[in-house]
Image 1 (tube, one colour):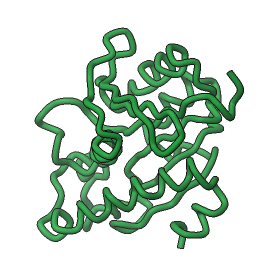
Image 2: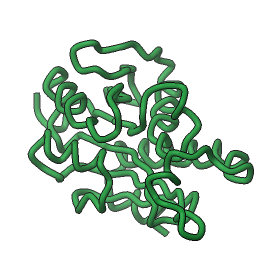
Image 3: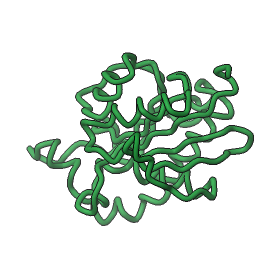
Image 4: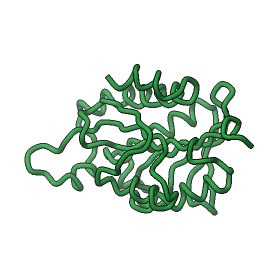
Length: 193
């Protein structure tokens, strides 16, 4: 299987469990759910990889959408397990995560780069032995005042944010579809503004 014909693995980062469901740190899970819905696929537990997985197609590309069912800082194991199981090269790995350094609802796409203190990204880098994969950085903004960023990301969305959240999730999913179909440069030109 060549890189061109290999499936894509889209990993939405978050924390499992009802306690974290509506928190800023779980934006990756929300986008993964949206992509699974667009493919018309049910999510099922992949026990060996410890992740919820939905398989399907977006236009002519085979897609595996995953939500690691480990805590954020242990996302690397499930991600590497799925890459191995589906024989997906890291060139076809896309990770969706929250980004404190972007204002709420801003998107940035890139390939490679540092982890910027994000434990989920650190874990994936460690497990895959590379950081050379795509990232969809979804802005959640900085915490107000002196609030600890670790507390902020685990807090529920504000009322204003909740109203805009469906639009942000949809736009993030659109950006991933465009990335897969049209490549990074065109997608960055559209969404990294």
